[in-house]
Length: 141
Image (cartoon, rainbow, N blue to C red):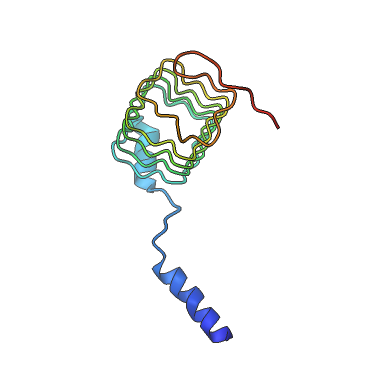
């Protein structure tokens, strides 16, 4: 029985297609130029960084930890933000057209003036400033 268990574990390790690592070249390009189109930043840690006026169209930022990031006035069209932590992020006046926020955390984020944001599948948006300037209900813990 143990042999089957080890074979199964080895199989899963060798043939798993799930990626938890971002592309380091893409990450460095974004850090240095504030622009990276169709980047792979899956699971990256970019907490508290300032990227005002960034261009990240068609990029994959799923599961990124970007709490308190400043992406104000950025072009974020068709970005995959699924499962991302964007708590306290500044996304004001960003173009979010076509971006996917399924399961994302946007607690206390600032989205005032953002365009194209579909927030219907966000996991947590409590306390956030919405695109129309209104406040979401406060977080209750």
